[in-house]
Length: 219
Image 1 (cartoon, rainbow, N blue to C red):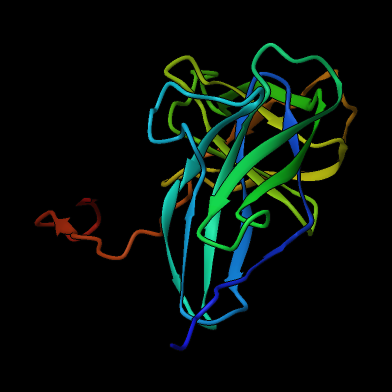
Image 2: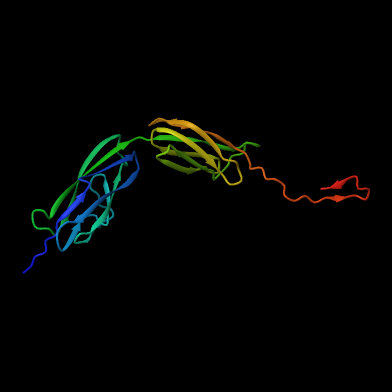
């Protein structure tokens, strides 16, 4: 009789994620069948959408198979709702069809919670001062980029990581506006207002209707 014994390998050793206060974000765990045969795995309890293990609120897919030599990517959701700034740890149970005692593993999860910076402001028309809705606001620093849109009153607000940003305002029919070197400190609100001017369109066709004397015309 030939026995095929699967073996679980996984990376990273600790699932680590940085999450803004009162938000959630997903991180990846890669599992591999380093042995022979078919590896069966299950994260007990996560078939129930209301189940959680401390700050881990979802694991997807929560169960499955991994053929010999193949890998699977598992999405693990950290929820920082109700957590204050700091580092939090928990253990995530993983059960497989490996030989005992290797069939029960505890995966370490570490969540770093922090308060982001906030950019906010108001966008108006440069001619009449009226608020502009649906203006795309993009804040970038060469590494990360964050987006939002203005509401009906021309207001916007978005969370960003602490850093110095180029803030760009874009709306169809208007000239773009850019604010450089905007520093957004963590835990504070930084105001960046903007005024956009309509794009000047050149007149392409002009119709003249000269009078009888040819010394005046109606355009």
